[in-house]
Image (cartoon, rainbow, N blue to C red):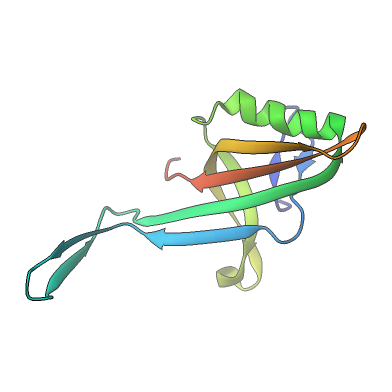
Length: 125
């Protein structure tokens, strides 16, 4: 599968621009004591919180509308498959479930727009 995700029509692949950003942080529980001592624990079995900032720059208005319609259809709660380059997989790609809770639309000119979106990884089948 190519990097990106498949739109509502089931055949069109939305491929983000180069330079996508992947951020990871770990969810932990921490208790600090008065003498500087602290204890830390991993919070949950899926403790990695991963976000992906993707851009679709200078797309035709029709393409931008299709991308936004896909996000609106999912309503920020329905997960979808997202494939991204994964350096841990020997230079391969990895497909995960994500939700898109927010996106921005920029009007470039009369015929082109750009879409910026943030995907958050979810752990479900």
